[in-house]
Amino acid sequence: MNRPGSIFKQSILSLILLIANLPVAGSDYPKQEIRAVWLTTIFGLDWPRRTVSNKTEEIRQKQELCDILDSLRDAHFNTVFVQTRLRGDVIYDSKIEPVSKVFTGYYGRLPGYDPLQYIIDECHKRGMECHAFFVTFPVGSARVVAEQGASSVVNRRPELCLQHRNEWYLDPGLPETADYVLSLVKEVVQNYDIDGVQFDYIRYPEAANSFPDQRSYAKYGNGQQIADWRRENINRFIGRIHDWVKQEKPWVQVSSSPLGKYRRLSQYPNIGWTAYDDVFQDPKAWLQAGKQDMIVPMMYYRQNDFYPFVNNWMEQTTRRSRVVGLGAYRLSASEGNWNLSEIKDQMDYARKQGVAGLAFFRTQFVIENEKGLYHELKYNFFKYPAQLPPLVWMNDAVPDAPREIVVKRDNNYLKLTWDAPSNEDYVYTVYYAPSNAIDTDKAQSILATGIRGTEVYLPVNINSEQEYSFCVTASNRYRIESQPSRGTYYYLSKYEK
Image 1 (cartoon, rainbow, N blue to C red):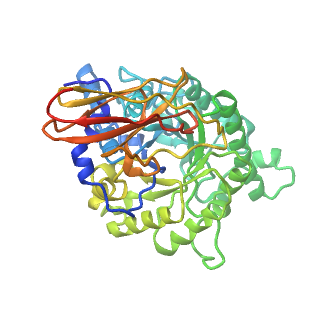
Image 2 (image 1 turned 45 degrees about the vertical axis):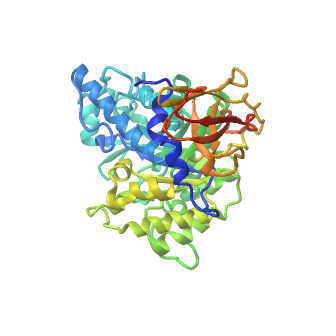
Image 3 (image 1 turned 60 degrees about the horizontal axis):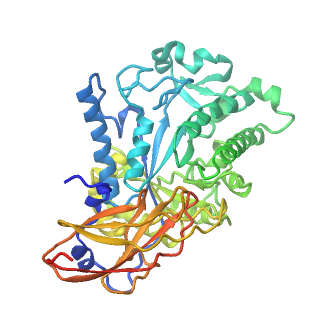
């Protein structure tokens, strides 16, 4: 039976089972937490796994994505960072760069649909935000540039590009590079209902000391030390992108995924390469200047390479979101062969330190249950849904509450409907309790969240006798939650009322 709003059905167990699984008093599950994955499109690593050449294969490719998102939703993930720009190619219908060949086998050819539009729509149906992540400066190997041909930025805008260790990069030292990347950001933000833009590789490359930017340094260095000049190039780039996005759509979040270690710590002076010292990123400066809504440092390390640096990120006083990026891929035998306990301990530690959430690289290693990670998240760590934290630095206006929920039986379902408090864009959270008292401060009371619509169908056991109470809140584009609606009482029995 295909019901409106049924995209939530599979993630909402019967109310009887939900109540049976309620934890004992004192169990601590956050009501608000960012739970994200990076969905990698380069080489089709996460999606799409195969190219398409006809309608049947297109349907299969789209279903493959839906299966991924269903698995994430069922484990109560609420955010997808989708790789939107790969290496000088993109996953949408761009007037600037070619569509990636991962969809059809050919650069510049769409697969009969717009992949970015499709993933945004499907994320939103499942109550998840969708953020477009851009590979910022790398634009491909010599082979990739040759395959892209005239459409490659290296061939269209050679004055912006430098070759370093057999790879091509945009030169961060040129003001025109910021113009070029901003033109891509404008396409995405203006044409799509995206929830955020995120920048990966927003740094100088490995072995940066030999990066061949002497010409731009000579022209724009103004007597600065080259390290300070490079950091300032990135700072200026971040600020310009942020300011344009906020002028265009102030609710769209701007974030980045810097290296996981900000700077060398005095107690760990030989800890390896860091964001500030080795690749000229200064994410703490971005936060202090208010030019980031979220940072997601890639902390794919263990032990003393991990825990002290979580603390280091949290020492930065800011209301902006700090999310720890965890290396799920490290569980793979070919990528580190970590024990699951390593990731579990990191999740526990990060949550206890008060981070805004967790992000996992990459999606495949989560949904394929590498060493039991998916089951650990679904049945334990992410056992209950979580709202996304409010973006109070953008806007703190509290929306009006919806009116109470109307509950009706529809065969083996309860149909819950409510009215929007106004004609603005909202997402809704439905709370419930097996009594008259609903504790809206507890994650265990959340039946579903991120709902983009005003109805939900819930599967129920019609042979049971049980009382329920429901209420609903509205959250605006800044995730500011209203007061709950008036509670609605419903008594479930096998006799329809």
